[in-house]
Length: 252
Image (tube, rainbow, N blue to C red; front, side):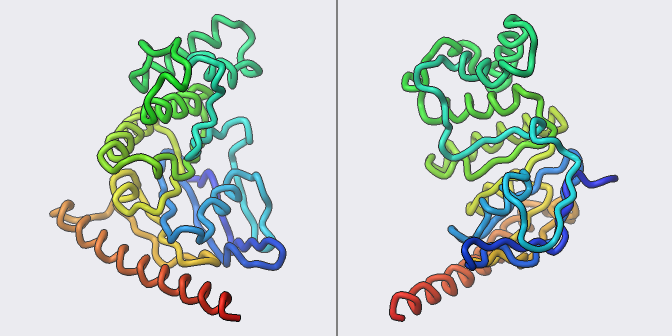
């Protein structure tokens, strides 16, 4: 199957500071990939490279997705506070569909998919944090994207709500046959959602391991617990390196 996105030995730095180092990988249509690594390792930068928002300093990125075919969900929901849930979605559709009734029909459908059609007229401040996240997901789905990008969308929510929303996302992505890249530092989120996980080092981000969850043998739950422990150990080691490096710079 032809890859949707291919990264070949990609590196990125800002003002001489290396952030991404020699990363190669690919994303197949219908696949859900998670990028997991310590805080500040460069996960969001890698996501921006995948989106085409920035260019690498070295290496090459081959993409079969146009910018208008990409949907984003960020940690900050970025909802317009003076517009209702429905209007926040029709706003992003205003240049995509000719008729207003088409825009509203598409927005209603997107809200229905996340279970919020009854709240279509509510302003964001009248919605709970989890409901605001659902509106942001509906907004991304409404454009019928070829690729969905999630940048730690639930890191500010408590664990039980996070896991419920992750299960909702998994259902929506699989039911719609969507392709997605999900950035997180939460191992459990990644294990629940992903087909494959790219485990990244401390900055500059390098690939420590690629975990294919589609090829787990019998006793999946037991395997997941083992994987979680292994990934946690690697991330703790990388975080320790990062903290020691920062400490040395502070002393210097």
